[in-house]
Amino acid sequence: MAKKYVAYVSSYTIGSADDNGIHVYDVDIENGRLSEKEQVEITNSSFLRISHDRRFLYSITDLGVESYTIAADGCLNLLNKASINGMRGCYLYTDYEDRFLFTAGYHDGKVTVLRLNEDGSIGEITDEIYHKGLGTAVWRNFRPHVQCVKMTRDNRFLLACDLGMDRINVYALDHKTGKLRETDIIHSDQESAPRHMQFSEDGRFLYVVQEQKRAVDVYHYSVDNNGNPDFERIQSISTTTDPDVIGVVACALKFSWDYNYLITSNAGENSVTVFSVDKETGLLTMNLCLPIAGEFPKDASLLPDNRHLVSLNHESNTITFFTFHPDKHTIVMNGPEVQVNQPNCIVFYELPE
Figure 1: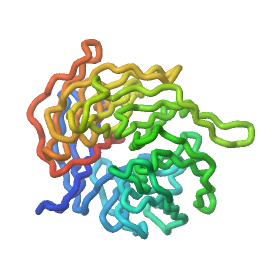
Figure 2: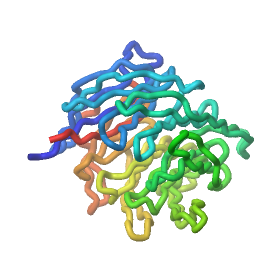
Figure 3: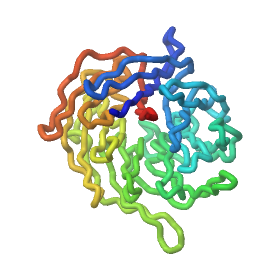
Figure 4: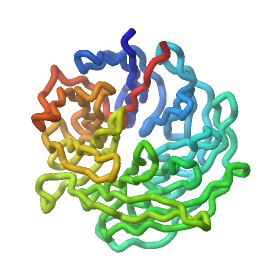
């Protein structure tokens, strides 16, 4: 039996009469298309995360975070809501045991840790850390702006991208108390603005997309004999074919289902970039960088078949579809666009057989 998938798309509801911030789609793998099956009422669902055990979905909302159970058909049922005791977050992640939920606060420069209950619902706050300091780019975001949080795959350290401070703070997680302890700082190039992160499937390599630098920095990750994390930068590769272009910022960072490709997007020139991944060395090679027929691609992703690509275009309120030809280094538009108000994030989910 062929595998079946649904896609969850988060969107902003501000300025719209539509209060449904999460859209659930059936995925037509063969034709590379999405068909809507459900809408979920939630305000400004700016980011989504599926638990590592694939049972629950978590979403950012104006008042904090919300948790949902995932039904057999992929539809969502609200579990509960919880406050993050701060301004609206922009990113979510769970540890690999699904015991804690981490949120990134762009507006207040804050990392929040919440306990997760066995039923998937969100519990109390266990830690709150405000980043401090001033960055170098006064004309841009010179204050702390935590844009992304992610656990290392060995489940030991939480990384927090600070776009305003041009650095990634590394915290050791106490798995009993949910407390964080800073153990390291990865310094990005000045005015590079680290935005999103991904780890390789085996956890040996960290990939960081730099918003203002318009590049992906690749790090080798290891732990020394004293249990301290070590990150060695081994590559920096441009997300555009013209690295000196003005008014362009890098946005998305997503692995393909099989980790053979890494996808990013570029707002301003409105393009998507697909890199081929050398799994042994961790190094990237640009396969293509081409237009996505929309404005401000906040997110882009390959479908699980690696033959189709979707782009979420925040300013044109569209999702656009393409057929991906890696051997020809091209994408070809695949049917009409789909209208969605200010789409921000897409997550694919494989339905149980």
